[in-house]
Image 1 (cartoon, rainbow, N blue to C red):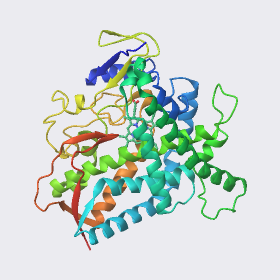
Image 2 (image 1 turned 90 degrees about the horizontal axis):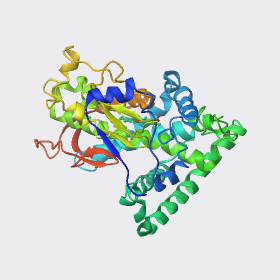
Image 3 (image 1 turned 30 degrees about the vertical axis):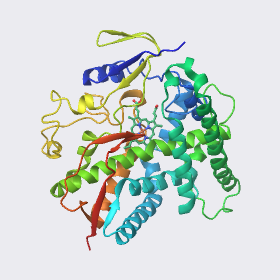
Image 4 (image 1 turned 135 degrees about the horizontal axis):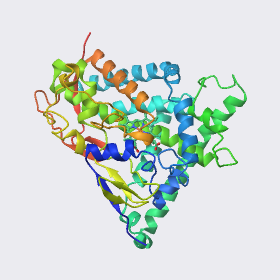
Length: 402
Ligand code: HEM
């Protein structure tokens, strides 16, 4: 009772060995700590599930029914609406604030609105979105790792935190279940809810047959699955945007060549999700026990001069000139893996790429972005806050282009 073995990978060859060559062995997740179990409904989410039939059913459902290219295309209206709202919000904030806007907050709001629409299939006003955001944030805060996650012997000293986590879970369920019921009612009586969208992630979950289980997901399980869909794609995408705009301000001449560089230099997280081996295995010749936490430290590859020429230099031309390239999925060789690699690679990769392209393109199309305070140098230090955001939240001056 008490300790966990942690194995930290930070080398491209080891990532390839673990997640591609021995992909099936390292495709599991370690034991959950008690707080995480509360919010994942005992590992009934894609990211938390152990490698097996339950994970396969949930992941296949999300990938095939929600994240295929044709399905992503269907949500063009939702995206357009969110982009228009983003531009309106930026314009209003700039007008009321001498041209200065916060980047992360606005990008986050936009992508959050898209994912909410896709998830619940019902339109929500701004106040509802804000409340939903608060609910989701309190969950992320409750999930912050604590010392008793690793030393359960200390758990009696954290009874208050455990009670608080249960309280947050109760609030999360109470707030979200009515939206689930609203969608269910709209499906049962088509045409009754004028704001209902033609399709949503929830629709794929209501009657989902999960291998090895006799029943469809319960309401609390639906809450966990919906929260995963929304949280998985919000802070990650918005963070990439914040770093992207910062680079853009610093390098006004290379705006159009930005995207590949953002993904590479600033993966929104330092670590991928934790993996675990399904059977005793080896990596780089070292023994890896079952259930050890296998962590992937991503800057280990993005800063490796053996893999990249001048890794510290912001140089999108490296991709466009054909001088260097990288397979984002890591199958041929791992040179960057902001979305992980192998069997657990992020299923939202395509959609996240669409969202980042779209937001960056619209934000640059509508406004010219410069540093705030004027002519100041941007501090590119990061700090960890769910994802790796900029230490000084980026503020920028925007000027409408037309
Ligand atoms: C820039 C945006 C995003 C980044 C950087 C990102 C990154 C990642 C990473 C590093 C993993 C872990 C991979 C591993 O375990 O090896 C992951 C897993 C996951 N992501 Fe994303 N993600 C993004 C957007 C999204 C979106 C938009 C969604 C869905 C709406 C999503 C849903 C998931 C899910 C469900 C998993 C768990 C997969 C599994 O365990 O099988 N992500 N993501």
